[in-house]
Image (tube, one colour):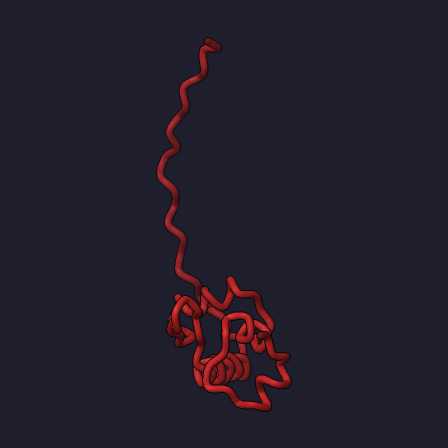
Length: 96
C-alpha cells in the first residue's frame, strides 16, 4: 500500500519505504540506494523489504540545506595535473 506524501508527513511514520523516501526527496529508487550505500541514509530490512529511518531522511535534508547555504567555495589554485607519459605506438594492421 502506497501513501501519498502528505499522508506520510501527517502520520509522522518512523520508517518509510524506498519508494516513499524517493517521493520525499524527489528522486528515484536508484538514487536512494546510492545514498544508502554511501551511508547518507540509515536503513534496515524487515523480511525482504528495505525500510529507511525517517530521522535519517530529515538529517540528510538538513545536511543538504546547510551545504547549500554555505555556498560554493572557489578553488583558487587547483592542483596541477601530472603530464601523461609517452604514448605507445600501435602496430599497423596487416589486413589479414
